[in-house]
Length: 347
Image 1 (tube, rainbow, N blue to C red):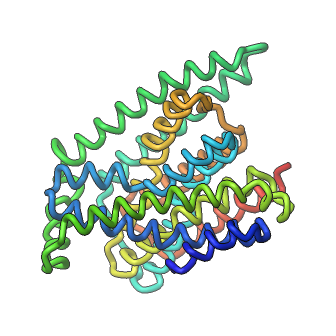
Image 2 (cartoon, rainbow, N blue to C red):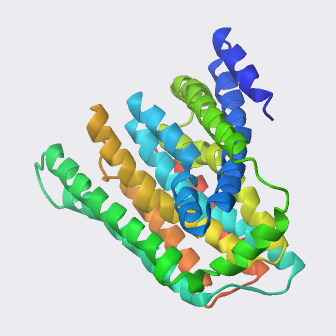
């Protein structure tokens, strides 16, 4: 799929139809995201569990972060916000739904640690509370200046980042036994017997990140025209289309783990990625917008907040007991289909 990188560049230089440029650049992002994920994992295996865990936590959503920053610089704040909520919804409902369904078709019931599920559920609830608060402030206050919401968002962003790093400390240091770190490490060691060339992997990570920035520029440049050509709203495009391009690697990873009866890892990827979006990527983008002079706050479209809350409630309801079956996967997928349809018809 790397062939789509030069194809998207050529399509841009020849000024082809914006829809063609949008699709080819979106497809070009997928292999770049895969290479970034693979090189990050390889480097993490070399530098050890502590630094490796931090590296994975930071670069786990590098693709979504880069696309969002490029779009933010272009002034597409609403699309950036929609892509954030869309990523959370897609990870919780689409990725996890497919993983549970396909894993459940092969195994009658699969399990994962319920204590970790409870912590993740509480963390997701915190994310919903923080996302809901500025919208609630705005709708319950007449004539409230936007600067007030912006200032609240800066403080909330710092608090979310603080909780995120404390959660990393909890999962990688003080309570790492709860997260099966040792088992995953031994398995990773067994599966990666050949020595990893650290400098080569760092080079791949650097080059792919630079190319991803360039391709993201092409994607964002074609985004507005592609939206009008398709007759879609920016809300639907941001919530449904953009997250799929950026998160398809994680979707495949979730399904792969589930089919191998490693549901604890599938759940960790899907819910962990959603937590990274809500607790790390969103706050970083708020602070980045502040620094680059393109203000972005945490006041989202009310229906986006409702959709995220629905996704969190649905995921928490099936994950609290630490067991899954194929019907619960169907439940998540139907929920995603309902929300996607609602976003399509939303004016």
